[in-house]
Length: 367
Picture 1 (tube, helix red, strand yellow):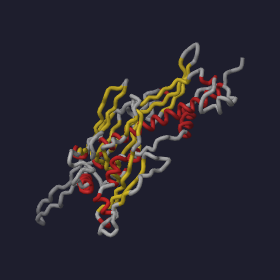
Picture 2: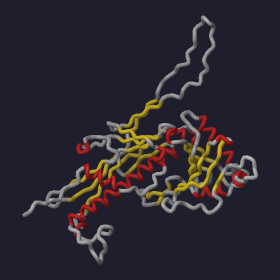
Picture 3: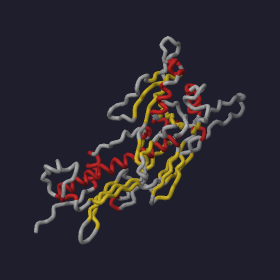
Picture 4: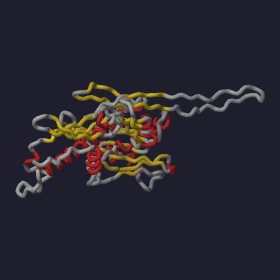
């Protein structure tokens, strides 16, 4: 009897397969997390230095004592991220029959051996795991940017709130009579107030983008005050929004830019207006928006937000206890009949070091 040449995937081979699989998500909110931090512990630690003092240099007599202006300190934070574990059993019977996406056709079955088909099944599982992990990372980023906090929970994980300490005033809810689209409400005045708030906040920043649902965008698109600013015959008419049907990129139909606000006349500072109608499937199987339809979010630059994709160590000897962002593993269980598994493990958290460089506002009534 010949030896069985089939071997489990090594970590190196698994990582190579993941590099070849393409994410199916836009990863819109992850753009504010350009930095990465890998902790060699189960905890993720980071600190924040104080803003430079605005004290004036003190006056003194020529022979008098000088005054002190130097003050330095730091605020430290420690977070233990939740684990993300994906584990699928490779059905031992599937390699024996036709499989959609692998064999050419049920009526013209590709002559693949069971072992060849098994390899391709594992590639499909790895791709599904990568896409699910990407969506979880996008969800973590969205919650951090939009809410300034994230609630971690799961069937096998206790509900835990991670609060990134965003200022309370950076969560705004408009009541009846003050909402977008209602009589007498100036959207531009509201924008100005939030811009001033973000610029004055500790570790804040000038917003460069406002993201919203298509529902809110349609209200802005029809706002008379904004339309007047688009009139080229009016002094200072610089704001721009699309006047026709909001058409999106066919490749990214749920995410698109539809306008620009110009700040302080000829200063050259602009704020982009974007729509994000992306959804994910929650644990109950319901399609859910990353950004609620009644909310908008102001964001400064990625550098100002200082977003870090953080990863804790993987508690697994096969991973050498290293903080690998997504650790792949291929293993077998069982004695008489072997059952093969493909798993991926991660210990992630998206951390905005400067959450005051973001601001959320509920501007229309919730559905």
